[in-house]
Image 1: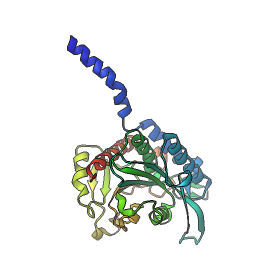
Image 2: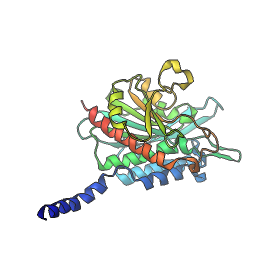
Image 3: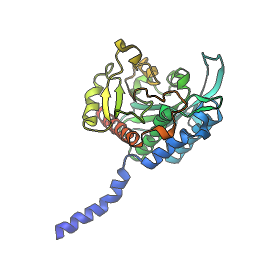
Image 4: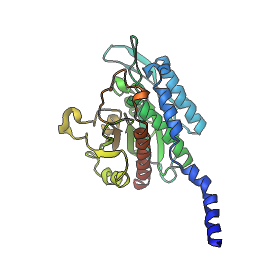
Length: 302
């Protein structure tokens, strides 16, 4: 009986710690994604009112969580000219939070773009999967790591203007606040909330094969089914090496892993809405990616 009492007492003492150690606030994750993909934000086109509201969400949350930043008010402003319409976009903005590492000054940079196609006539391109999904997961990961300090310093970057040629990522790499050789890894998320075959891809290990066994040991037997690929030059358009913001890190020799799903029927359509995501898939994908980041944070310490 005394042993039973001791066991029950240990469980009682550990319960708050177990609750605290829960990795993702699933309700908050879904709420953030629903807001980012809502009609109120009108597709988050750079410089639009909806884009400004998205920026405010990231800045307010980073402030609330207690993240720091190398940029005033968490904001890295930049300007670019859109090749398609020739328009000059001034004061586009990446929103950047920072958590110092426990044992190394080396960096892991976690990115997800928050922009999408905006409003076109009467149609709103909400961009739920592309990429409210990755952007909301970014907030969830920042919330976890501020409570569970990582070994590496971590930068959480909500990137603007990905849909206009990775402009936010280009600006980040061009004006990075640390030497780029301090970055051991870029984790990029772009479309992680739905797939009919329960498949999520981790692209990048063709170029950085040392990462593959480290990821496999975490993903084996998990759901969604994590696949490798979409990163070999001979694949043509199916090669995702330069398909999203991670490309700008790769071009500078920084290892990357790009988490995403294959294109679906609502890709870049007004039907990419919150109602069409797969909630269980999304939550499982976010938890899996976080577990992989946690493992890589430990494994890559030098």
